[in-house]
Amino acid sequence: MAETVRGPGGARVDLLLVSEMVEPGSRVLDVGCGDGELLELLETKGVDGRGIELSREGVNECVAKGLAVVQGDADTDLADYPDDAFDYVILSQTLQATRRPRVVLEHMLRIGRHAIVSFPNFGHWRIRLQLLFGGRMPQTANLPETWYDTPNIHFCTIKDFNTLCSVVGAKMERAVALDPWGTALKIDAPWWFWNLFGEQAVFLLSRRP
Amino acid sequence: MNKLWLSAKRKGVDRVRESDRPQSPVVTFAPDKPLRLDAGVDLSPFQVAYQTYGTLNAAHSNAVLICHALTGDQHVANVHPVTGKPGWWEVMVGPGLPIDTDRYFVICPNVIGGCMGSSGPSSTNPQTGSPWGLDFPVITIRDMVRAQAMLLDHLDIQRLFSIAGGSMGGMQVLQWCASYPDRVFSALPIAASTRHSAQNIAFHEVGRQAVMADPEWRQGRYIVEGTDPRRGLAVARMGAHITYLSDVALHRKFGRKFQDRTDPTFSFDADFEVENYLRHQGSTFVERFDANSYLYLTRAMDYFDLAADYGGILANAFKGTKTRFCVISFTSDWLFPTSESRAIVHALNAGGARVSFAETETDKGHDAFLLDEPEFFAIVRGFLESAGRAGGLEPPQV
Image 1: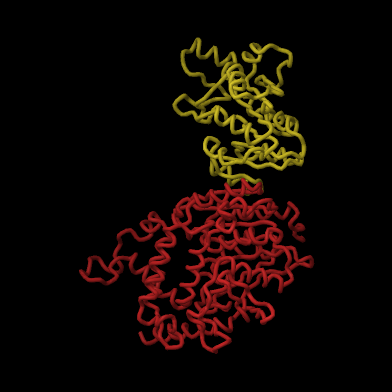
Image 2: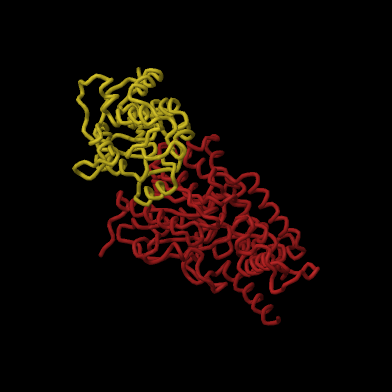
């Protein structure tokens, strides 16, 4: 249940981690901002935040809260944003639901000086065990949907995401893996350890100069 | 029948009187303050009729300008002086409503070219003493906005806390933000577009041709000649009204139901409820609207192309703007579809503007912005409240 583990202020742990990576006072685009929880968190740091959200309910909730959110689709609408429009472009728990993750990541690095991506790690040992012994597509508390109903069409592991970063030429500035209780794994642990025990990961990337 | 005719005649007289002496505040701009028109001529002297609600605060910082649509007027939230019906946006504007008159000072001017007291083709031409008719210069959305800015100068309002409008009103909102970015703190262009599409122009042309084909139109001189092109204007309204609704809404409301009968009459009577409804829409419209105004205002919308004034690049119209935007569209609106609103959002994003955009789900078509849509109201309320918190306005006094 890592996705709903909440920190001291009542905020989701992964969102707290993301917000920690953002410099106060910067300009941020949150792609797939849901009901605007991260944007609200960022506003307390004096961040000038904007959001894109696919679901109409999410957008309306955000706008009614006074957040600057537009209804749109990460797969199609990022192309409309000019280069260097933001300091950070954030994609939180959404990468696996995009049709073309590589294109989305490339756009993020074009629009923002930095990209922050958080995603569920499909290499976590529980998921591996389910597939190995159950012989079926894994379902966890964190990813409860069946394979035929899930919006998540592009799962990846932490190692896989690493590869994507080098393919698109992103520079990895920081990476954190969280265990199911929302605690960060040891920073000096090897990648295979993260890939096995991290339930989700957060990456801070920048464009290679 | 005689009574009905008399009532229609009386309303016609009321309507003509409203053009020069409206039952709302009116400001006349003397010859030293001409209105510079895009057509290259000055309109002078000219007048702007307007309505206000709520109280202007000491700092003059709580003004909200409402821009009305093609057939709207300044009577947003009061009984209409000609029709006796409620104001056109009484669901949105009033005490405790999303555009809260307990907090904001709401101003709605009648547009230049209109027929409810701002100078237009049915007003008296001061040079001749007769109604302008087609001698009235062709006006644009930008001319309307210029006149509104002069009204605000007159009211000593330097900056608007917000500006809102749907359809043609949304066009004025966008023009305001492009022409006077420093005078607009927040803006709500609703069911709007930055340019009229070929299809929209085509629909308008059909309406204008219907008016001009009426033998009572008399080359626009019907007031002087004592005629009334009500049939032509009613047909124009009937056609336009269809474009304001959606197929689904029409079907739900009327289906193929007959009007007060069980069988077809095998005639061209209004057998169907939907025919009866449209005829009613047409006949009530002509009681309150001037045929020439219809020509001028539809023309102003046709000419609107905001990008064209900025080298064809819409984003340049909003470059560096500090205004907070909330763009709203409706799913079943096919006259000003969501794609038009997306184009606005795209340009605003490219210009670095702070923009929200929400598409409200409804089957009521373009006219949804005038109707009771709770989701839409929540968005407007939330947006204005957050704009107030963001420094546009001090919190309400308890």
